Image 1 (cartoon, rainbow, N blue to C red):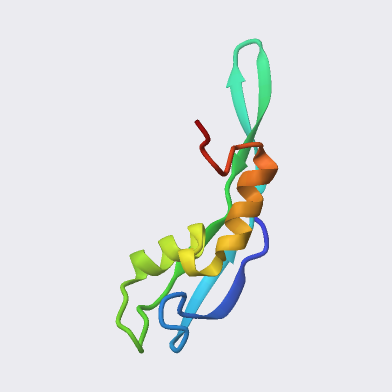
Image 2 (tube, helix red, strand yellow):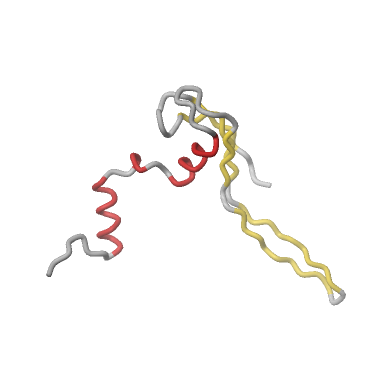
Length: 98
């Protein structure tokens, strides 16, 4: 098991309340499969996990919504120029011409 980090994060919605979270980074774990012909080790990948321990005391958002916002990021965190730059870099057209 990797090192867990206990952090105090500000609420992604109101930016006022402080929330206790635990971040478990991604890691590989070897599982063992035993059969009559021998053993086989299988690597298993675990994604990064965020555990939210409390609701926001300022705005009252529940733990589930805070966890989703921390995992995917809020729309306010990405500016319009950053989104346009990402779209241009991926090769998608930014204007539709006839």
